[in-house]
Length: 155
Image (cartoon, rainbow, N blue to C red; front, top):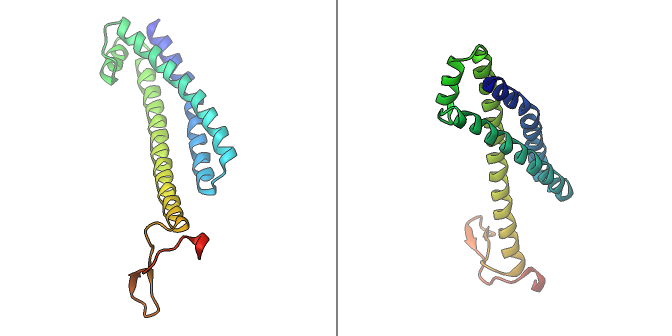
């Protein structure tokens, strides 16, 4: 009974995990295009999917804990060894684990994109407000800093 409930929870997470992966891929495009309305919509949908996936994850952990099994792959393998659907349980768990790993990789990529855009924006703000002078090439082709920084509004 516990094994079938666990398998059902795992298979129920395929659709939300796939949707999350697709949202993360769309988010990557929206980040590059700086499409703020789309990013806000994606954020709301991502949060709902993450909450659902976390709830199912807790339920899976509760099932393993109620059987006095560890809450990791070893506990799942132990349950699978005693179940008639053990092979299916492990294979479906592997599929979900791979899907979640793809989501995490896409999320890391999006995070790196955000950091790069923040750095570019900070640099542009420095130029506009007359902060540290940007390093530029001079007329002779050598790399040098501007002598007197001026805010763009004062140029």
